[in-house]
Image (cartoon, rainbow, N blue to C red; front, side, top):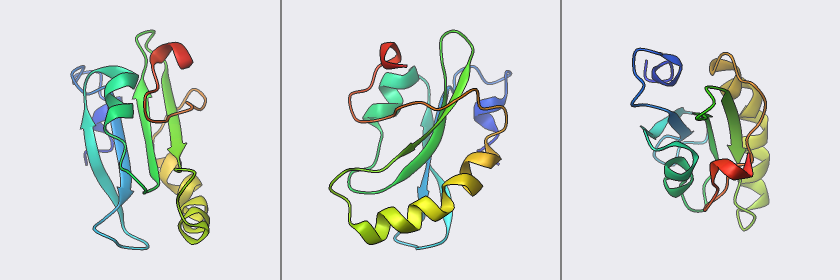
Length: 110
């Protein structure tokens, strides 16, 4: 599954991944974006007004996970996403701490 692509050293072109709810589902979480370009590219791909879970490999080789919830998002969505956070992030094996992911984030913010 594409969740493991980010941890595959044989695929250096994929250094970030974003998971989120599948087409308005309240329970089905799927990969919604992945690619290269580091923290900056990942930050640019964050969905608007939706929670996002994911991970990013830094230029140092460290792998960090993130959980992003837009401040303007409804309390109901925030609560539901909070309940799923640990389950989703546990799938991304080998996380070396948390990344404060937000629109406009750079690796220097890490």
